[in-house]
Length: 116
Image (cartoon, rainbow, N blue to C red; front, top):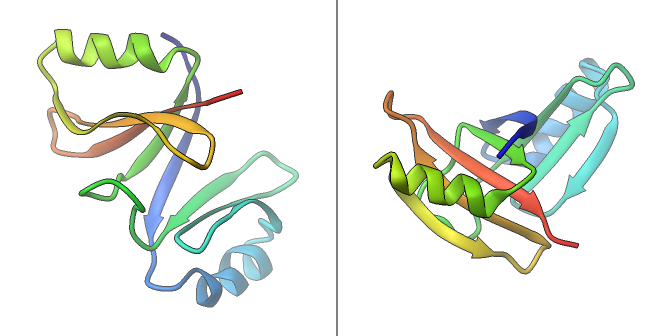
């Protein structure tokens, strides 16, 4: 398993209300994901951030989303290492396969791979 991208997931009460700050003020005006509960803003420089109101299917919100090249291998290794799985390996209807794992420091990470 290899990490390909790492996004901070910031909790916000309202994505529409946050849009002016992140897109307007910070200039991250490319909206790569646009769902009612999560969106990703990025800029031409490569900087990006995800805003989350609440996760659609998981019991907790992650602090970061980690894109990997093999989510099944990542899941197997997390289990083998004894890490707490917060949300089981799931293929979501919006085109990703993912699971949530709690790091030893308590942070919950969304480990994700896009499904073709």
